[in-house]
Amino acid sequence: SIVVSNYPTPTNLTLKLVEEGPYYYGETYHLEISLEPFNALRNLELNYNRNYMTINEETMEVTFNVAGDFYISCYR
Image 1 (cartoon, rainbow, N blue to C red):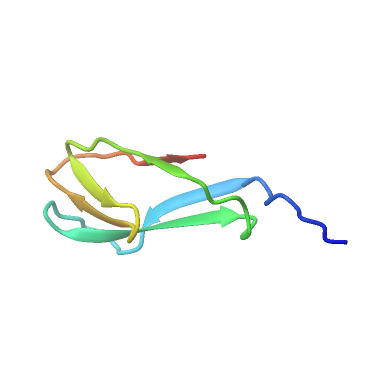
Image 2 (image 1 turned 90 degrees about the horizontal axis):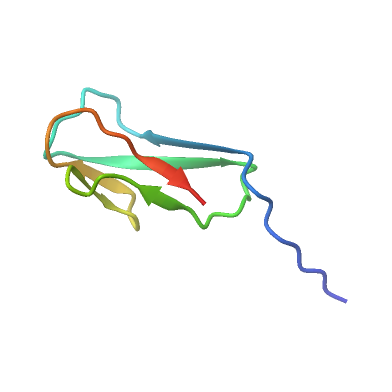
């Protein structure tokens, strides 16, 4: 017999830029998503203002198009 289990639901999620600041518009930076537990379900969605930044969700690279304060949220 084969038992197939569900992935655990994330209990903690952290989204951060890999590079240390200061950050400048027009430059590309890398986002890192960390989940606890490590093997948690990973079907996550990013929410951000596409007028002010561009995120390549395959490579997790973000480019800020203008200067200012920005928010990126991640949910499942």
